[in-house]
Length: 401
Figure (cartoon, rainbow, N blue to C red):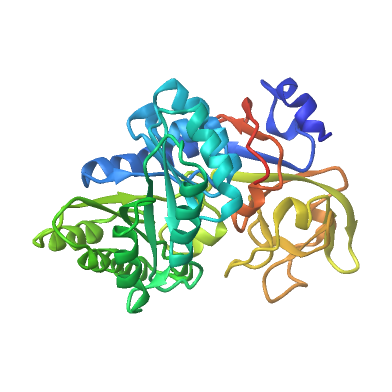
């Protein structure tokens, strides 16, 4: 068993530098600042909010994102995450959860079990193909005593990321809407999209442009609905005044639209988010503590005990697979499974700093990671620290699928 799972509470009250390595460290003040800023934006813009729980996958963080029940719905990427949030539903501060993958047959019995054991929780499904309707109709026929008459569904729209969803310009979209409206196994809840390609943006104006395209995409899909009724359009990014203008401009039409904003990485942030130009370096709440295992003056490099399985092989415009927090010129230049190699990240790798003058065997180093979602998945315990980097809490995330 992982050492942290057995002993993590014993580190409460101790400085982060006392932790075993590698360890994942979360700054609670930074988490709270990032969360509270977004919650204030959502309030000011009068938007509904559906946080994604996929990044840090923990009960404690989900409670913070929901503001302890001020917001009452989430998105999850795994069945494990859905099971993990059930205590909040039973507590009465979570009403609704969206399973964020297009539905597949083997997930349905698990979802049905969740509905049966937690009847106060409303479960939404994602679809983007008529085959999904076939699956849900077959399941309904095979389970006539199911405790809901129809599955509420989001139709996923592809607005440019080409990961999942039906393209807005495709003839498949209006046909799918008609199929949903004609089926007794489902009811149309709304339209959903995620502009994953926004990660490639490098300026705030670029982010606003992509977000505008995303909002227009889901709103355009609404025109395929028959009749006038409320429908939810769900988009994913930080809300801005630009988004509000897009939504309000659409409200002149004949459909009532509620904009549900969802996002998952914003509490922690990472180097990829810093590269977009809208996140500051000090807004990163997640760090990895590693330890220097050896120093090599001949090639001006150092070995640390954080490799691929502790950091991931995600990259960005920031050089390397992770960056030393207090020495930005040093990054994780190469990795194998458990080994990381610290090297100078500038073009002049024989620069003024010599590795033997900077690092020594046994020294502990803090690293910013490239992609918090992937890095967090590798760790069994999160050590949550205060302003002085003293461990005050330990969070055990939900693992698996």
